Image (tube, one colour):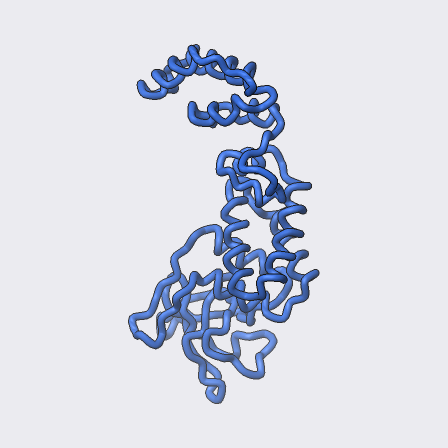
Length: 258
């Protein structure tokens, strides 16, 4: 299914146009299995598309307005593809938000706290790629800020981030550590967070010289840094000249706990 936003729709005649990432799509009321009583401008619609053999225009089929609980999966997928929504040329028709954000705002409207939490958790557990975890959290913060009061926003984000922290896998945790986005796993007590040594060993190929400055302060920092530096310098084919110089310099530093 694809996402579109209604540019205009004549409810008396039963047809209109939707803007999408790829351009405009003609949409007819007959394409809806369950026909809405009224379709307003800027409503988000889900559909499949085909080329009309007579007009050669792109038309929508199997259409429906957004709102079903599983529609969050489609919204999140659009958001994480970071597709830039095409703006119209007319000043009155500008869409100043990403298509997925518009869809998310309409989706969240009228949903209960439990419905929102359930949809977001299902996508996290079943569909979210590890590399997209931080972007997912950033998207949640953006749409929550725009769609609800600060107290509800903070309550939902706290519940979600605690859930993420309790169920996070090693790869997501490493990405959080690299980006220092510990709030996304419910940790807000300090600027840095000593993750398990095994996680750093598992992704040691992605650790660079600047990361060692952080790691050396950890309880296992001295031995970990020494071992990693020795391993890096044993295989310099993967390193740039600048990186080799950094590791050679660090090899003379005594890493120890403060």
